[in-house]
Length: 289
Image (tube, rainbow, N blue to C red; front, side):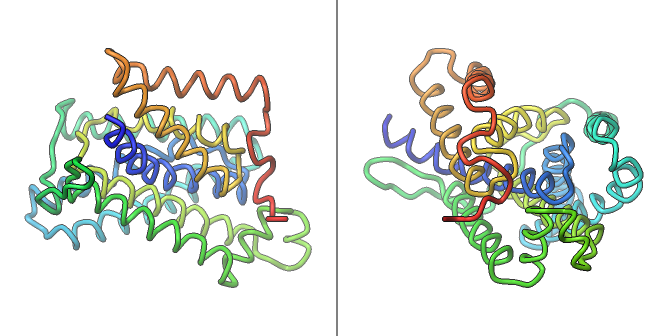
């Protein structure tokens, strides 16, 4: 059981980290609480499913096309729906909730409410310490690790990443220094939704595709960013691992654990809000000291 908890927590933590980092990036740069973030995760899963099962596209090409398509859609949604009301926080929140529900209803109308399955990208299992780990889960872990490293490199070793972090630290100063904050916001939205889309593609073979699959990750993601600190990348990664392992322990040790993991995540979120509202790592993009 211990080995199962360790593996499940690590794999789920990688997927959660991709979602939470993207959510934190959008908030840090554009000050947008994007409730529709996990809806793009759902759309990527549906795109991947459709390309594989209805158009017989290969796994790699289907994954790339799904990520690119959903990323482009997010830019269109940002320009048409979010940017016009960006200065009004309540309007942005309502708009992103509406976007998520629109995507949900569109998928419900197009595919029905059935649970759809996608074959594994890689068949077979590996035995480690007496535990059988499917290659698909190892692939998820590898992709998540690569993307987290790529995110760090992008933000800390490129000029665009420096501009994104500068905008996140102080929007007004970045604007006064001549940075195009609106362009930085669009780049951040594209990068963040791209991470969510990648998570949706790699996780699809081990989870059912359905119109409501964005809701559970939404609750978990909110709990993670509250725990780690909204806008903190380091907090998102550590919070993702904490929540993932707490969920894994709940699922494997309690009789009805699979139905309680969402409640556990919400309980952690409420407890953190009451005890330490700024989360474990404080404000957005707090630099290492």
